[in-house]
Image (cartoon, rainbow, N blue to C red; front, side, top):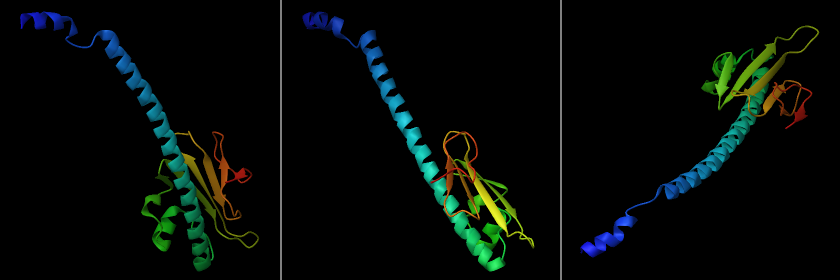
Amino acid sequence: MNKILLQRKGELGFNLIELMIVMAIIGILLAVGITGYRVAIRSANETAAAQSLANIRTAQLNFNSKYKRFAQNFDELVEKMEFDDKFKGDKALVNGYEFTMVATEPAPNSPAFYSVNADPQDQAGRHFYIDSTLTTIRVSDEERPARKDDKAL
C-alpha cells in the first residue's frame, strides 16, 4: 500500500500551467460569446425600434383621421389611441432606444406635421427617423440622429 502511495505522490492534481491554459481557453470562449451576445441584442433592439416607429406612424395616421391633426406627444397617443404604455412621457425609453416626437398643429397655409427620432441609448447602433411626409423609415449609421434625407430602411 505504501508503495502505491509513493508512486502517486507526484500526481496529486493539476499543475499551475495546466490551470492557466484552461483559464485562458475559458476566457477566449467568454470573449467570443459576450461579443456575439451584444451583437444579437443590438440587432434585436434595432428591429424593435423600427417596428415601434411603424406602429407610431400607424397610430398617428389613425389619430389624424379621427381628430384632423396629429398627436402632439406620446401621452396623447397612449390616452386617445390606446397606444403602448411604455411610450408615456416626452422622451420614451423602449428597448434601448430613446424616442422623441415633435408635432405641429395645422395652420391655414401649412398642414399638420409630426416627426419621431429613435436614437440608441448608448449611442452604439443605428438611428431612425420618420415624419408625416415619409412613407419609409430613414436610418443613419453615423453617430448622429437620423434625418429626412438619410437612406431608407
